[in-house]
Length: 311
View 1 (cartoon, helix red, strand yellow):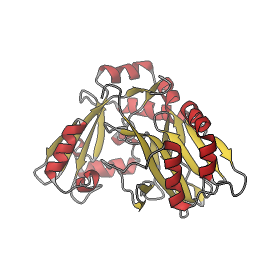
View 2 (view 1 turned 90 degrees about the vertical axis):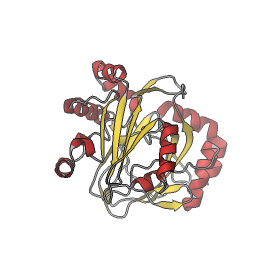
View 3 (view 1 turned 180 degrees about the vertical axis):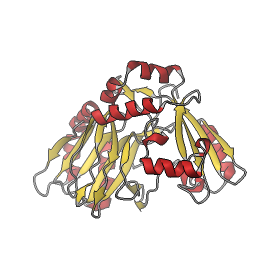
């Protein structure tokens, strides 16, 4: 997937451009999956917040049920995932493990990397078509996919940060409302189990899309040295995250390798420039992050909550 680029005349205010062209831009986003607005006058983080309101017609969403470390820049504008610069972040659809997810994502380049650091994109319609039909059918037949998250004390994102509260009763109430099974461990940790659909229907086009975190969170998608280190510390059932078929059965490693290849085959990239704004249809495009050198600061915002039609 290549983001459709719109390049401005120097000094063109991005909010004016969106206001004048919103209907066309939204139509193109729903067809192509990603828009790159380049060369516009954005106005910093405050202006970026205004981009979300101009395009989506609403304020950005808060980052709930967190799965990765982020820092708040201002309001509901966050840093992209705060992982070390030498680590790749594999392709995924934002919050596809949740009962409600953002339909539209926004990225703003405050400071580009010196080298690499792209936000690669993959058309998940193409990913769906690249997956062996027998693999797709098995996920559907076995109830979708399942993620098990283990929140360990002093390791990874703590449950208090993930759920935005230190009250176990509030966590349990949240989980009941979102179809999540919560189990408190003897050591004070928390295990959650969530089952979601692997294949969704895009609400605009009606196309089938491969919308899930089954590949992203599978232990074999980690770098080999990270896999080895985690498995030295934890048995598989206690790994910080791992994925299964919806019925709880193990997903074969070769199946996950096939899924990773499907994402890779559909991936394109571009190099960030300062003040770039990238708008992504989260149900058409998966995104990731390349390793990088240099400062690289990308702001992220989310908007337009979406859920399965039956929910």
